[in-house]
Amino acid sequence: MLSIKKYAAIDIGSNAVRLLISNIIEQKDKPVQFKKNSLVRVPIRLGADVFIKKKISKDNTQRMLDTMLAFKMLMKTHKVVKYKACATSAMRESENGRKIVDLIYEHSGISIDIIDGEEEAAIIAATDLNKFIDDSKTYLYVDVGGGSTEFTIIDHGQQKASRSFKIGTVRLLNDMVQNETWQDLQIWISKHTMGYDKIDVIGSGGNINKIFKISGKAIGKPLSFFYMTSYYNTLQRYSYEERITELNLNQDRADVIIPAMRIYLTAMKWSGAKNIYVPKIGLADGIIKSIYYDTVSSNTQ
Image (cartoon, rainbow, N blue to C red; front, side):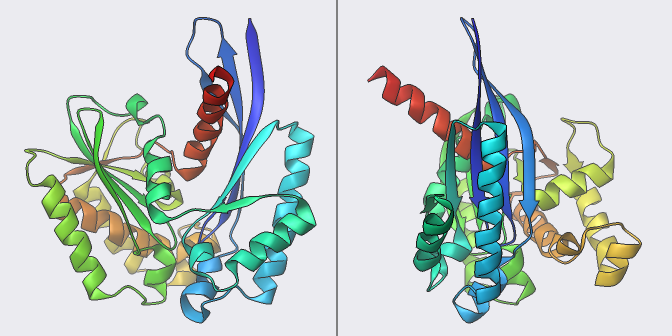
């Protein structure tokens, strides 16, 4: 017996808003499959408002309303049966975040959960990382966002520690990360990695996905610290405009890719990792799985 349903995840980040629609494929006596059907990304960059002015502007409020109405229509035409919308760093720090969540619900019927950094890290860590990792190894999982970055230690397939730090690409672009925050991160990474002989980094987020694609590496092969450092230096030799025209980066990627690389390289340096693996998973994937497993749990009770 084959069952295919569509679930959707809405990830409202500090840099972009995403709608992921996935097929949930169930077969008797076989593990469930999660297959990406559609991904739509809108670069609203809420963090540029919030981290500087503490609130989301009228213009971006309207863009959010328009985007959510569009997402609602897309979910309807795809015949999505369940969805979950989560807002992260920018929305939780915005003075008018709750008001905008209410406004979106009033206009579109879409209900949004504003989640804290620890819940965000937990959702991301609950993705099917076991498909991508070697159970005999130790990893530092780094998910870079616009407003925050989530760090998780995974040893022999088990999550050992996880924490969210207010270090993100949009914050760095606006020079809004204090030295103390970097120091706290260094202490955390050092504390949680010192007992391991060898660590690899797993990176997720739109920027590392783009870097991996540009590298031409085969799926499953890592990027080396040498490659990451070399490409980081290359990017810095180009102006913002040149990164768009000559390196073929989208305008909303051409600026944030440099601070993103800084975060990944810093994590590799402080953990002593020589390689970074890029499995192309993130918060939206975790949301899809949380919907499914919550549904399964409620049906068995």
